[in-house]
Amino acid sequence: MKNLVILGASRAGKTTLSYEINRIYPQYHVISGDSIRDAFAEALPQNEINASNGKGMRGRFS
Image (tube, helix red, strand yellow):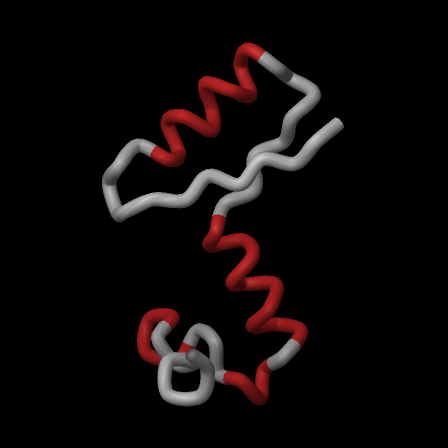
């Protein structure tokens, strides 16, 4: 099974598309960007990933 990554602007319908793909192809799992960010914040607290509403990394990483 291949992985799909859906990228786009805010409110472009990424989540809607993801859940529609999951409905048609239930072998795919939907993982939200928020879940990924939370996992990184827990694993790497020194990076302050969720500081300032998730903007804590902007000054350190391009």
